[in-house]
Amino acid sequence: MSGMRSNPIFRRMFGDAFPSSSNLAFDMCKRGEVSSTSHMIHLGCGVGSVSSLINSRFSCNISGVDASSTLIEIANSEYARDTLKFDCAPLHKTLFSDSVATHVFTEATLSIHRKPTQLFDEIKRCLTGDGLLLNSEIVITDSMKLDARVKKFLNIALGDDSTYSLDDWECLLETNGFDVIQAQIEPSIMRSNGKKLRRALFGVNLLRKTRQISFSALGLGALENDFDAIAKATLTAIDDGIITYASFISKPNNSLF
Image 1 (cartoon, rainbow, N blue to C red):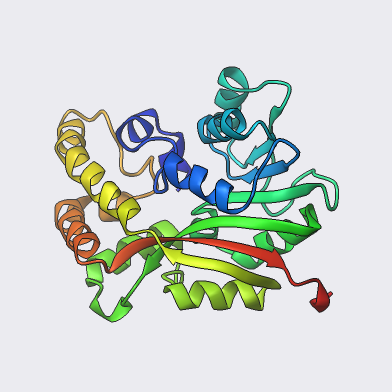
Image 2 (tube, rainbow, N blue to C red):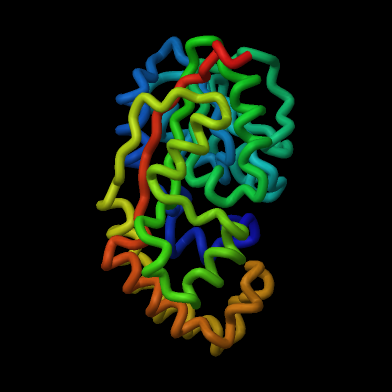
């Protein structure tokens, strides 16, 4: 998945916030009461554009971290400033001090991480006692209705057994030491992604024909022969609300430690 995010063509088609949106990021920050006194860690910050927008809107200090040196190089070149810093590090083993952040913000980072429990442990370490986790994730409302080809794509992109329902996400958060304050489906986000996918399909097929894009370079080589059918089935699943998006606000359950 990091191969996709670092590809400039992919970023141009879908935007740096994909599969979330900057508007959802702002809304979550408002609900999480981010302010000028907040110190946020943006876990999986990518190229830093969303971090920059949040920093400008809420005047908070932000420390962005991503495992991709390519993305962090772009972030430092284009967005770094006194109240906005970026570092490259494994997301489950950052260089931050204990209890340094009032908020940890992620956009589908837990969805695409092969071992999300490691991330939960790191998030708890970094948050203050009354800090908040603001995360948004891909949600499957009914896995039984999911086309087998789409399941194959999700298993490659997200990992086996990572297609969670809203209840599954709440359970995962609670099992890993968080009390869920808010959990809500964000249907407009995935509808917007469906529109982006439709617009992008023509361009992707053209780039494939002219060899300007490589599925192997994106880590999706196993899907290339079935790409058109998978894309159509994925769009249908989005339209039918089977693949959707959700936001969560949680706090560490310190009584567990």
